[in-house]
Image 1 (spheres, rainbow, N blue to C red):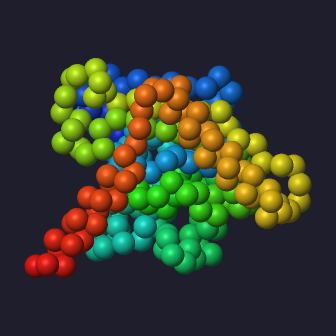
Image 2 (cartoon, rainbow, N blue to C red; image 1 turned 90 degrees about the vertical axis):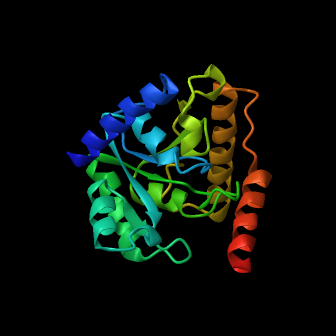
Length: 224
């Protein structure tokens, strides 16, 4: 209940400060199917807009365990379906919880296969999780302001957009080979490119700029 209430309030607020969000949905998307939702990670806003685009079904996002820094944050993030995971060494329990959630069919599971906002390389893990959960992979892209403060604009060029792409089916085999994994990871990367092209062919995520800002912050903290 808290998830739905918060998402409704957030969606309403975004509509006021940023205008109506453009949501484009591929005709192959079946809201009743089981999906592992994946997206390119560019902003802390990504999970919010992906969740808004996939309503009324809820999304249980996998997120770094560091977010659950105290009892309140543990309660809050658990309440809104977050599945904590050690990004460097994912535990079997986190993976089992994600697979169990996918199989239940009550929620989608969402993750960012690049692992962070500072790379566009697809890491292994999403494919095997989708295979274990007997789910298709659903690529969803968010385009729009990177920082929360930049949402406060009704300019059309600054409006948020989301594309729910064409689901990616896994090969109908008992065990995926290394070549299968590489091919599906490449399909995910190509799906992200296609989603961006459909939403806005002129869109460009400034990855180098994001890395430079991160490094500048690290240097500033180190100098204190």
